[in-house]
Length: 415
Ligand SMILES: Cc1cc2nc3c(=O)[nH]c(=O)nc-3n(C[C@H](O)[C@H](O)[C@H](O)COP(=O)(O)OP(=O)(O)OC[C@H]3O[C@@H](n4cnc5c(N)ncnc54)[C@H](O)[C@@H]3O)c2cc1C
Image 1: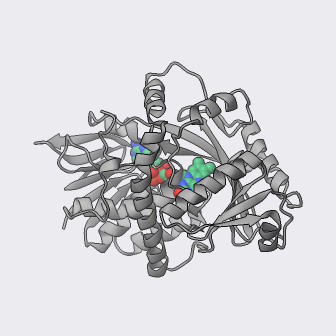
Image 2: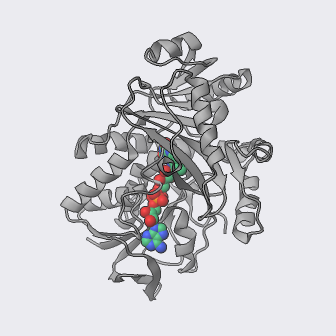
């Protein structure tokens, strides 16, 4: 068994630790924080095989340029002369065509389906202390053009064997008896499920800690020691940690770390916001994506979370309150009777989605080093893909055949 060091204690790092622990490895997770907040905590909580189409799709560039003119639109790129952003933008543009998207659907579907199955197994194994509900997710729409597009998506889903049900406005309302719903109609994907991501992170961390996984927290990775084509240790602000195998799972900060190893990873951070309303008197029964506005609504027990927007503005940009207001406004537009008030700024959460240019994660060995695995770039699907990514990372370390073909997720595909 190997001594495995995982750089990054987000959902990808913790799920990797989970599967490595199961195989008897000696695991250490390093994080520069204390694993109590971050992108893996405040997200919308969907584990959604329905999202088999990656972000870079035909038409998204034109739509994005239009959206960029509005400060409250769902998508925004802060214009700046930055070599990494330009490189990312060029590759995003190259990936945004029908042929590439169609090529990416089968591998995305395979990893999403695997992860969905594994997520249920994790719930059985560690106990459902994270409010996981396996009841599906709505896609709700108000405009005829969106309805047409969503129905086409449902037809594509059917080709992959994913069940959907197209619902009228009255049928959606009947399923949400406690809250008024103002939509043209919707589609439900019964296979999707949702959970409280913060509770999931806390439960997973406790589970791992209680079974011997070591956590080196508040330790920033500053470099690596190498010898003979291998990494021998991670250098952190709190000392050096030696290992046989290394997994990098540092989310949006990954390129800063891979650069220390001479490995280039094209990635941008996609900022999103969420707001959580506690102990709702009347809550939604189903999670829903408000498709026209790209907003996610998730009931988490008695609480309700709403989130959205994609803002490509670097790793340290300030909060743009207008974007959070746009999320709130959309929620009131779809659910006019919702008893929520816009929260104070300190109650608005933001996180950074690690975006690869083609919307596919990077999972695999990094060619230059014999004992390095990269696991990141999961964009808006990090929770949905965490279980499968963790399992695959463990299979790579164990030098076993991976559960699915991972060639589409090749770490060097843009080199
Ligand atoms: C608004 C919003 C809604 C979302 N909704 C969903 C959803 O419903 N479903 C879904 O599947 N996904 C969703 N996502 C995406 C999902 O949250 C991310 O893809 C996922 O959390 C990424 O996990 P990660 O482990 O790769 O990165 P992170 O969670 O960012 O973890 C990376 C870790 O690395 C650590 N780190 C970084 N640099 C260093 C360093 N130098 N030294 C030590 N440690 C370091 C960080 O401290 C961090 O803890 C959403 C995201 C946002 C913003």
